[in-house]
Image (cartoon, rainbow, N blue to C red; front, side):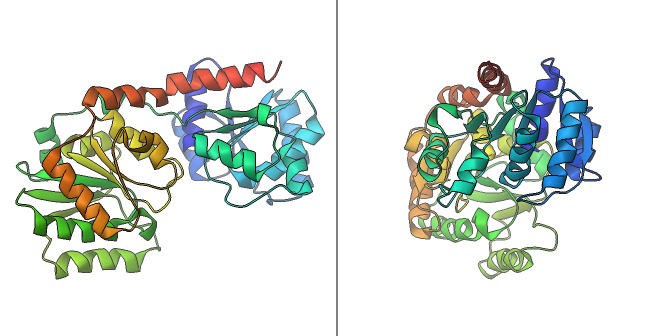
Length: 353
């Protein structure tokens, strides 16, 4: 959906945009819903899919497309082959959203990557991965964060109104975590830390999860969450809410936001919490430390370390030593989609010349 948001914004800025998507995919359906042009393509293989590349090259020539942007590493192979067929008149760029993980400095990866005119990274640590794990030319690497429409989060509803809408108590401090109910998101560790917290403080506090389990997945983990709530008599203190589109209501309702993922590459929800002016507690892994400027914009803890998280939560409740709302919202504006789109336009234009 990040791809679609960017396409939507760029179209609204006057660019002619089409989204390549498979028929009946969620991306194709949602693009049509928001009025973004869709070009239907077939599924392709990750490597050496010459047939799909020829079809894509034909579409690019027929539609006089000048720039092709890919956001999934699964698309890099066919995109590189397409660039070979179309030639220099096609500007090819990769907007990175996931970490590389392993070294890819072999000849095959190097040849494929060299077909790209630009490789854009959302955070410094990901840029460093590209420099150390690939042989991609450094002068073609650019740092551009993923963009967000911050308007809803900078104009939150009133707290008590939001809590009434969500059916949450109004007279306690609320910790909140948003995301699918999954082991990688760390809800169980947060609940264990929360249990320790309420044993150590007299302050009234509750915990809110906004999210649902993935269909046909994570049933065991979801059941473990429910069992933990039941076994530890937390029904009146832990609230699980289904995901909703007006997530600004969730941010308005909570006092503290927790990012507990085991390894979040670029946590958009952390940016949303910043724009909402929430006090943030984040796991010291992935992209979260850089988003929080290594502790200047929130408190950090070691992922899965229940004891440490419990202590951080207790300190947060009792000392309230956090940045001001103004400091947080100002920092979040770096990720405003208008600012990000301007950076994208600059990269696409100047690397084409």
